[in-house]
Image 1 (cartoon, rainbow, N blue to C red):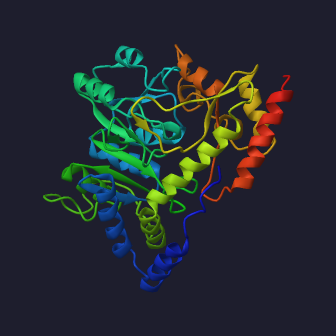
Image 2: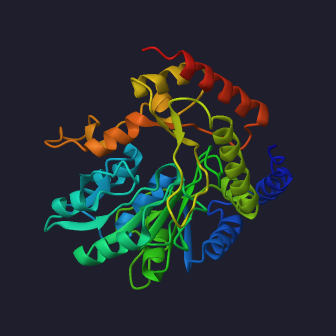
Length: 368
C-alpha cells in the first residue's frame, strides 16, 4: 500500500496572510469567530470556544463547571501532567483512577471506590486518540452526580458507538499544538452544548471580559488565554482540511502497523468494538523482555514514542503529587508494555519505512 499525498498547505498561507493584513487585531475577532462557528458545526455541538492551549481549554472548562477549592475531581493516572495542572490552579484535588489494561478504558470499579463526598467531576482522557465506552462513562457520571470534562486533546475525529470524542460530557477539550491532527502551532478549544458554559469560558479566557450576562466585567479573577489572530487563521484553515488530515493520519498508522505485522514480540492494539479511531499514534503491545527499556532504546535509535521519548509514567507517581498508597498498577502495565509511535502530518512513506526497519531490527536483536 502507498500513502496518499499530504493535504495541500496553500490554504494555510492564504488565511495567515489575510490575518496579518488585518492586524493589529487584539481580539483575533474575524478568524476566531469563524473558527468557533465552523468547529461547533464540524463537531455537532452548539458552541466552541477557542483558547491558547489544550491546558487552557481544560482550565476554562473546569472553572465553568464550578470546580474550585475543596473539590475532588477523578482523573485517570493514564494521562500527562498537563491534564491535572488546571485542577491545582483552581485549588481542586485530583483523585487518580486506574485503567484497565485489557481495554485502555477507565477502571470503573476503582473509580467507584475513590468517589468521595467532595467529588464534583471526572476527566476521561482519550490518550493516543483512543476513546473509552461513552455509555459506561455517562452512566457512571450520572450515578455519582459528576460533571464530565473530556480531555480529547489527541482524539479529534474519533468516534465510538456513534459519539464523537469531546461531545459525550458537559465539555470536551481539544489541543491544537504542533503534532496534533488539527493544529495551529499552539492553541486549543472546548466544545459544549451549554450556553452558560460557553459564556463562562469566553469570559475566563480574557480576564472576565466581556462578562457573561448579569455580571460586571473584571468582577472575577480569570486568565489571559486568548488565541492569537495568526494562530486562529491556521486553526481555521486546518479545520477546513480536517477530513483529509484525519484520513492521512489513519493511513500513516495503517501503513506502519501493516509493516510491523509479522515482527515477533509486537502486537497491534486494535480499536474497540464500535470505535472509529483517528489513528493518532500507532499502538503496539510489547511482548519482549524489559518492554520499557525497549521503547527507550527505540527512542535513542530515532523512533519517537510516548514512553521512550517523553518518559510517560502513571501521573499519580509524578513528583508534584503525594506518593500514592495504592499505585495505579493497571496504568503502569499499560505504559510499560505499549509502544506508541509519535507521528506528524509530514511523515512520508520513506520515514515510516525507516521506522519499521529500525523497530524490526531492534526487536530481532533485543537482549536486555
